[in-house]
Length: 84
Image 1 (spheres, one colour):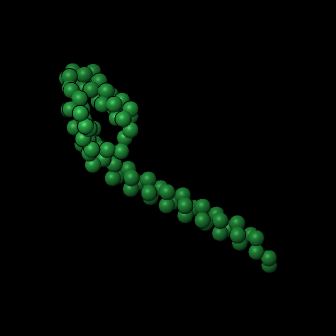
Image 2: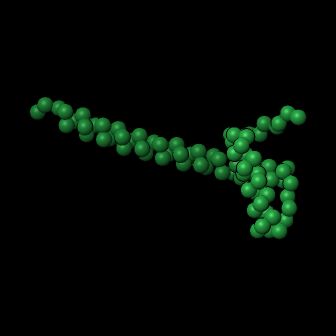
Image 3: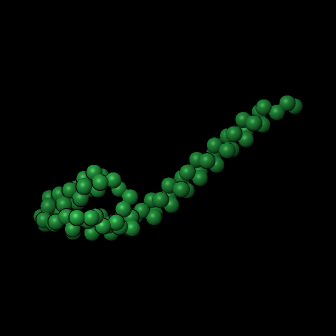
């Protein structure tokens, strides 16, 4: 049976299966509710769609900050190399 490719399907097969088991276990232990794989996939898809853009944007912002700091440090290092 071919798998369905979803919009935010960025997880590897093993990681996705682990998360689906964790979701099902959470509902069983915390909510005393047994859910199947399809329900767990829908929950995972919901949170992936809701969170991935925010996490991605924060990661890009963090990377920009690190790069800016690195370039600032590089500028200082290059200024120290100048003969006066």
